[in-house]
Amino acid sequence: MTGARVEARGWGWRHAGRRSHAVRGLDLTVGAGERVLLLGPSGSGKSTLLAALAGLLDPANAGDAEGRLTVDGLDPRAARDRSGLMLQDPETQLVMARAGDDVAFGPENRAVPDVEIWRRVDDALGAVGFPYARDRRTDQLSGGEQQRLALAGILALSPRLLLLDEPTANLDPDGARLVREAVAAAQQSTGVTTVLVEHRVAEALPLVDRVVVLDADGGIVADGAPADVFGKHGSWLADAGVWVPDHPLPERRRRATPAGTGSDPPARLLVATDVGFTYRGSPRPVLSGVSAHVEAGEALAVVGPNGSGKSTLATILAGLLAPTAGCVRAAPALAGADARRPPHRWRARDLATRIGTVFQDPEHQFLTGRVRDELAFGPGRSGEAAAAVARRVDDLLDRLHLTRLADANPFTLSGGEKRRLSVATALTTSPSVLVLDEPTFGQDRRTWIQLIDLLAAHRDAGGAICAVTHDTGIVTSLADRVVTLEAGRLAPVPDQEVTA
Image 1 (tube, rainbow, N blue to C red):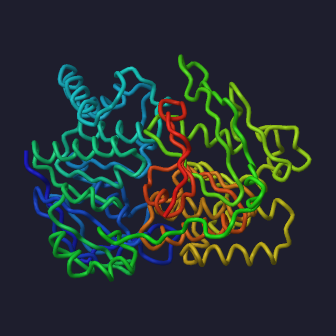
Image 2 (cartoon, helix red, strand yellow):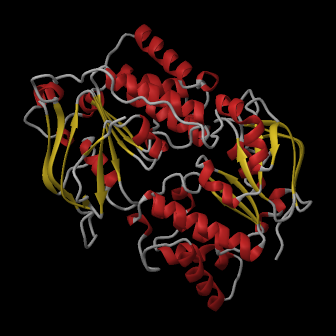
């Protein structure tokens, strides 16, 4: 099998309901078997191009196309059997209740013989390092495990064009390594053409032989071998928001003395004691005997392998889930009149103004049909004056490069734009505590720094941050303390105070 050939000539796409194009004036050729790393600032159209190549964009109902885009000389919609796309959100690609059935779904729809289907399923699950048997329920997988399963489903189709949209974004280092090894093995054995969008640029370079950089205003601003592109254009690419190897990130750790320090210990706003949690129908707990705390004036990073219980712990700390064992208590300064109640028993309005939450999947928290309305929803419900709400919304739109999208539907944004919007909505009610699950997912270098600056300002003003993350940049640039989970328990190491 040989890889597919991709050609774009003056191609552009404008999503339905948008004034500006997501991509415009694109001229690009990707030869059969080439391996391309697609870079560019957030909102430059990388995900749109991948969706178009996968045949998922239909001008009849999804937007307006211009120019020409082909896969092996065919309209991508007529070449869907040659391509496999892994989306930014793997949950949207899981369609079956059991892992093996999910991987088998694609080959079954292509009438592959049963014996061959299950050989492909087992080979694909092994290739991505999926840690469970075929009968593992897909609704019991962590985000990273879902990501590996989605990739297995794509590899089982033996595509000629492999389209990967940040395939390691939600994976721990070992999981990310397994996925990269699986992609490399597929490239080696099949010669598949690969177009990869990835922010972990240094780790992705062994998978590619060419780098193409898209401009936010349309077209290509750099194209060539990785060493040439980064050697000639590295500094200005970094300034434009492109992740460039060997360009350090700024440090935003705590500089001011946190509230309550000096002769007094720091104020512990949330304290979890021996917390455990078991999902209904599951034979084993996701969390067991976990004790942790969140302090005022501190950024806490919660790290650990996929499936270690990080997201569950974050949801419990945020008051959105009641632990099945142990308890979570809030300090009187945070709880107010609810000092005797755990956060999960607070009224929704009180919870939102005290603890802001960012889910791993940003779409799970969108409630309105416009970006501006999404940002105004929380403070509007809490009774703030309309003029004050409008000023705060305009400030966040500007700081997070969302102003041009103020009237867009939140569900039509790119993955990085959705993530910035979800962080902004958590900030609009001015909560004392922010609980964030992968808050920097999908960001270019510039918007990543702006998000970190925004979170650091919240922390330095006396607020508390608890960030669940696989992003080592958060640990090295923002975190003041690190807690590590392994298999639902605290790792046998003390909390790590991060020092410069």
